[in-house]
Image 1: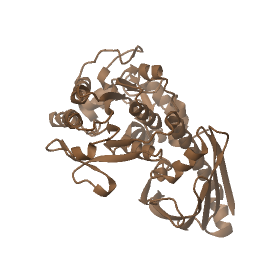
Image 2: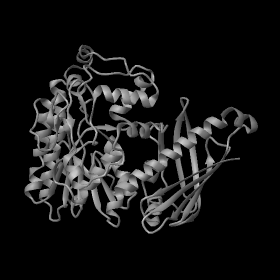
Image 3: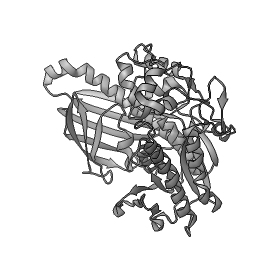
Image 4: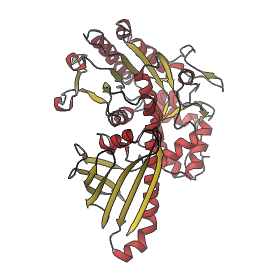
Length: 458
């Protein structure tokens, strides 16, 4: 029987670390982004007999995995054993140990046996060991990111509503908050699940269930039609604007009319506010709005929250850069061509790429909720780069050349105005207000972001 042990010091007291693992959302935060996986059943609570059921796709086939929890010692440890899955046997012990008053030790100990006995070990033993080492190293890094961003706010228990909870950012924010002990309600279009605490949003009439929004500490508004989902026809442009401006205005009016208003409304915006800024010069929150469709949309999007601001609600406009996650977005689309050696600069390659890792974006949103920020805030890493350097770094991490250019003419022919604005233009955006507030990035460099998102730690 093979044994894997990984231990890491975490920058939080042991009670918080243990509680994180026992709360809803933990299983979602611990799924590596490169795995094609789906959670089928989440345990209501980590207690003896609780079951977690999910499936992973390997070699084009879905494999179901069922694990049962046992020997649960709240605040100290719990264990799970595979009842059905890819291994002949699997036993996993999660332990949480004190390391002084302000830190703790996370230890994962796994005993497993491959199917097929001696032949199975001979054929797949090293590959499985390598994959498990990669996965558990990634899990411990992800845990450290989350603990890093929660540490300034230990002891706070907030009631938060989140729109866009099915998107790349919202889908990560909800478990990020629930594992820290916050009560999170999803703002959903159409019929709401009252048992889950959903807040109904009728986007056609522009109305929200105001009663369900009473008494919240914060609302995070992330909903909006994807700007890179297709060519920018006139109809598509109207949809992009309406999904942001109309929805934000309706939500702001609703919150302004509440008897018990939230303390803060955190609204997504984008660094598209600055338009195209050729050259290496940086822009920040003090810079004027740029020109073009995206800049005009961002300005209208931010102004749409005025009703909430006028009602005394603190409003934060998080101008989000290129979000890096292997699960989707720009990086998710780029990984396949780069792995095939088909990556390279787009157009001139000199346009600015102002990016942020998804884990750090969650940290920025947490800071925005906490009261340390107001108005426009650039959610980008401290190291913007050119499109050419972005490609070179990704190619280096993947061990592939990044010298296959995508000419500007081809971008315009394939994607029209959308491609021209999103791929051929850009800006070097500085996170001046985050720096001034004392925000600390967990993933400050492009190399670290690519290695974390792909599990290639070197």
